[in-house]
Length: 416
Ligand code: AMP
Image (cartoon, rainbow, N blue to C red; front, side):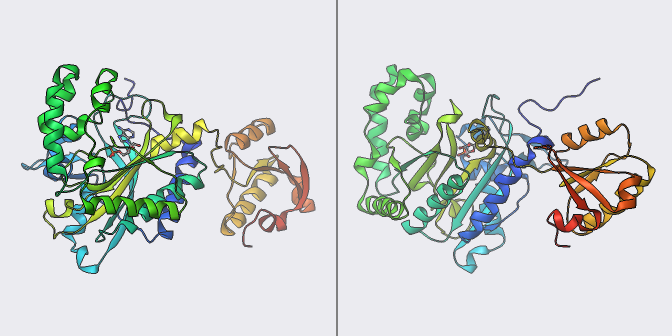
């Protein structure tokens, strides 16, 4: 019986893994520049965490979460996103006593969505969460961090920004929005009609073409913000301007849950087609409290790694090479012994190298060298052993340069 992987869950093969390593290494590097530190939380959490932290009424929790019974009676879930687990850990370890915290994570998330390009059932997010600061300066800094990260990869995106208000201005707006949407019920799709009572903000987010005229004419929260939210938004924009981060106000960009306040943002890319969002985030000043911690403001984002990889691929950005510096081609038994000895010396010096221990035809070994992604090949036989010299063949240009075998490590960039 031939076994295949689970639908919507992908393998990243060695030939492509260089792209992933580049994205991850750069995230660690850039996030550290902004004072963020890595947190690793379990892939499995109590299902109740997501019901409370992501929201019982959301599609993510309602329809898409992988939930299972543990041997006891615990209902567990594969995490559908990273924020809830991070906040759970923040509270559980009492991290709030240490003042503001900036954390980031990288990891697999699971949602039982209909798989398509850019949408998978196991996917990876790279995310940042900052706790303990309500000031708009932090919003601007975090959004700029994400723009910086994407910019270093050469990715061109559009940054959309909005304010979803707060407990002062949103309730009155929601009441108006509800009655407006109610009055146009007949012109809305089934999903929208369903959401009018449960989650009217989310209706604004609907992408169905026939709903657009009604949604475009809907009252805008941006026009109804209280002074606090208006000032906050203005300060975030001023911060972004000062940092040279271009952005566009997008009045219909929403985050559907009650604990989200003020800043909401999204980075989109034309390279992605229908699933255009590469990253999204927002301020969640009431989430820590919702999950049982002390009132602690927070803001975070999550970036989809598969989508970022798709953009990099569409841009034609090469996968960074991860092959060995040199591949030894074994011409005879003396050469094979010397190759093993030299490989040991090179590896001790931190230079990656490899060989095909089958020691077959030279042509086959050269082919293996290319398949391994080696930069150079070096033929070793009795003649090279006797002279202590060989020829380093650049596998891209085919150019050959003589090299002394005892200088190989130094030539190939190792410390020795
Ligand atoms: P969200 O947690 O829904 O705000 O998503 C944040 C980011 O994760 C999105 O902008 C996407 O880039 C990515 N993402 C969300 N769901 C998926 C999925 N099913 N497959 C791949 N990427 C996803």
